[in-house]
Amino acid sequence: MSGDDASMASTTPAAAVGERLRITEIFHSIQGEADAIGWRTVFVRLTGCPLRCVWCDTEYSFYGGDWRAIDDILAEVASHDARHVCVTGGEPLAQKRCLILLRKLCDAGYEVSLETSGALDVSAVDPRVRKVMDLKAPDSGESKRNLWSNLEHLLPHDQIKVVIASRGDYEWARTMLAEHALAGRCMVLFSPVHGAVEPRELAEWIIADKLPVRFQMQLHKLLWNDAAGH
Image (cartoon, rainbow, N blue to C red; front, side):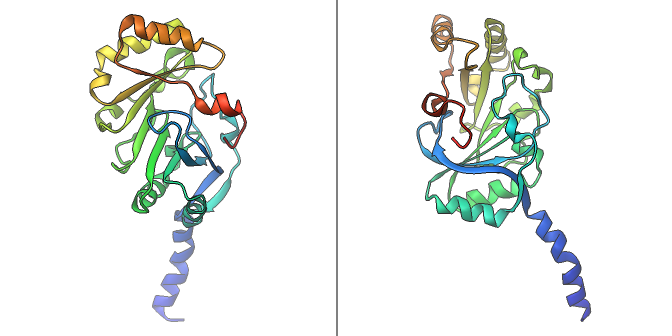
């Protein structure tokens, strides 16, 4: 074996590992929220999350999953013939190679969105990606994890999402909206926690206060309740 062959043999396995991600599921459904709501979308759900929001509806993605080569992920996405792809979790940015997947999806011509908790740095995310970034309100139990420097890395096509479980959460969100001039950065979404705040009640609060935010409900829950794979 030549020196070059030996070098290739020693580096190829590490390179292959570097192109893998741990995946909970890949599925084809209807986007249930944010600005792409209603579009047929392929969802790539990565495994793992460092947060433990009390109202989380995807706890099954915290553990397990299967290692998948990024090129295999791209091939499965392509098989569904959809324009929109949503990379979600868990917290997808907890796996650093998520950035590679996002870039390759954009290079392939998809409309790509990233659902992220707001607790991890988003500065290295490909600017072509639409970041849908949470700000965690107090009743989530994780509001201290908000990485406020992320606001400086948001682009006009990005979105800030606040999930609201109580009137207290709403008051907090209204204060943050003003203090950080959130609506001047990008679209702001207020969403009620299913079973905790009546959607009509949240809508009426927004109307009464004339807030420059977009009310949203999770369309997929109306269609399929909390069934995995939707």
